[in-house]
Amino acid sequence: MLSADDMRHFLAVARTGRLVLAAAELRVDHTTVGRRITALERAVGHRLFDRTPEGWRLTERGQRLLEPAESIERALLETRELVDRGRSSISGSVRILCPDGFGSFLLAPALGALSRDNPGLTVEMATATVRLGQTVRDFDVAVTLEEPRSSKVVTRPLSDYLLKVYASRDYLAQHGPIGTVEDLHGHTTIWYVDQLLDVQPLHAVDSLLPGPAAIQSTNVVAHWQAVAAGIGVGPLPQYIARQDPRLVRVLPHVEYRQRYWLVTPRQHARLSRVRLVAQLLQDIVTERAEDLLGPG
Image (cartoon, rainbow, N blue to C red; front, top):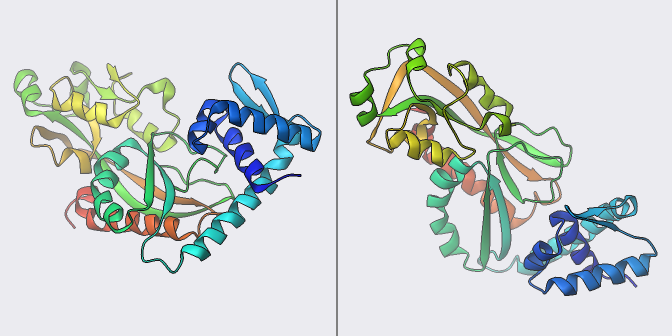
């Protein structure tokens, strides 16, 4: 007979694709997860996963079980919410997916009060500047640079922010002023790894650069550190650069306006901890509006 615990193990493997990662999520040994999946497959009479060198992949039968398993998980979460509703603080875990700049410079510094007021709440922050995939099983709340089109999520604009071009004072003292976009041809530029950047809005910046950036990274924190260290010139979010006195804005007539979107899986949107984090994110961008978009 199937149980809710069977579905929990099934979903962990389906989401991670690896026994070891699923075991870490469930806080059990990976051999236990393997045994539970084998027993589940025996109970339903079908193979649910293909074991490949790249990981465990759902079979067609496994795909059919996914939605019922998620429905069971959702019911358990809502039941837990009802049980916890009378408590003054919120417990459990919430996973936030967001771009690395947003997570490092906006979200992380604001987590103190959330943690202090809700000591039983675990916040998992996964940072990456990538396109949000079709799956909504890997996060509870997401901040994205593109508006998802999936019917499985609830989406609303969170805040716009400005990208501007910066160099360090030391770099400009050594290499001279930068007055026009054409002047960039003689300078080291810093930006994302072109072949790995799949976030379409950021490609608007490509027309500014004279060619592929000389220094490329998938991480905006690396861009900031490289620019601040005097290695070259690069576009940076204003909310990062304006906090660093080493940096000077160049090309004052050039700026790019981007938008952050707040995304929650529809099945999690009503959970107290998800609503709490969504409100925190809104409070952050309201409080940091001047850093994001400049005076006024």
